[in-house]
Image 1 (cartoon, rainbow over the protein chains, first blue to last red):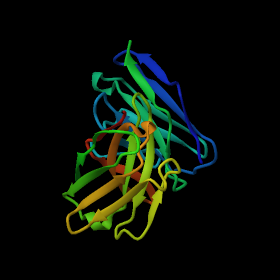
Image 2: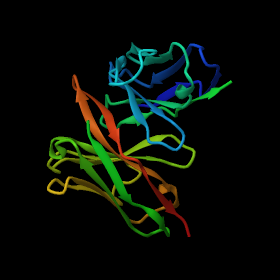
Image 3: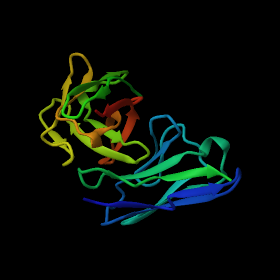
Length: 107
Length: 121
């Protein structure tokens, strides 16, 4: 199985801050990397696919980068609605796996 | 874009069975791979199973293989998950999810609203 490891597991930040979440794969996964946002009590939503492509309706303050084994999700200027848990996911192998999640909290 | 509405779930004793359903609308259901993903209490996301458009190709996570059965009825635009021999560790919110392919890369969108399964005596 491809293990996905996110860091940090939790992050406190303020509105207007720039934050970056990392995701590392246990083997090279090319660009088969997606990011999801999950707000409390809701289903996850696709945020970014194929490393850096924003899903329709996602604000441009979100961006993704990386290739191979190391990937990042950045939010340029945090808004109140961005406080949520973020998950990376690989689809390089058919045994799709997710990172453990990064909970972004208000400082 | 598509909508997925789930039903089923609930409280069941260890060793029992449950069937989850997921009704799809606003897209050509038979053209898409579909998946089940679960989230244990306070835990992250874990892929459970997938099925191709005509039901001829199916895969399971090791943790549920031999106990869970995924199926679909394209005439009813509905996805199912039959869960047998349930264990306490199967307790989770289960999500129905569509596979989306862009440049050969699969992502999950949209997601159903989720349905709670609690396995407890």
